[in-house]
Length: 317
Image (cartoon, rainbow, N blue to C red; front, side):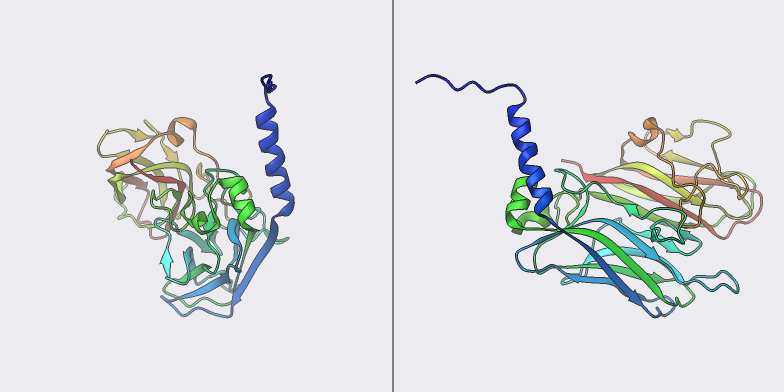
């Protein structure tokens, strides 16, 4: 019996054909929720969706419409975070500022100057979209600051995948979907990294160690974006690795974070410019077994600097 000749690229085309069939079969849904208020220093579920039996849920975009008082431009909502609702288990190191004045998850409607935040590309192996198994709950929790929040709305764009779709795209069974990268049950801590930091300074006029983040030896973090909501007295900012003694940027003028000239735009829904990707040298840098220091220089006491870190995190094998 003669050998079967396989032309170059045939396997890749067959795989793409299967993926294309899967893309046509998956069910796109929009998850919507709203609350009338959130008490000060309290939380509430903005989204609460139970995955139907026979499906896995892949969440790839989230938007929040915060409360807003036009009389003083105040907003009580501070940040949001996703979790698995049946266990109330939050995904580690994943919190997003969502205040009206510094919202990193734009709602994406006609009143928003920025589009909805895409977490990652869906239906792509090894992506970091949020993943939940059947009968589990995807929840987005809103947290108010020291003032109560008024009405808050949230949406999420997601796909429902049947067992065959999960196997075709990701190579696992339906019950293992949440164990994949981005899934809430992933044991490798392979998630989106999102850290919402509130920073104050003393008015010294020199660099202060404004915030420190301990990175354990079993975790690796890579930053892709940094957004800053400046204070009237904020001036410059840099990152410093305590272990390697490397700092970003390497020298003066560092990152200028003045109100009138901010080189790290926050990308809020009412900003003219989106959050910018970090240069490749910074974005490819691995923070591991160290302390990440955020140094800030001011021109007077700063009380309301907001820093949003975005990136990826993985367990070191």
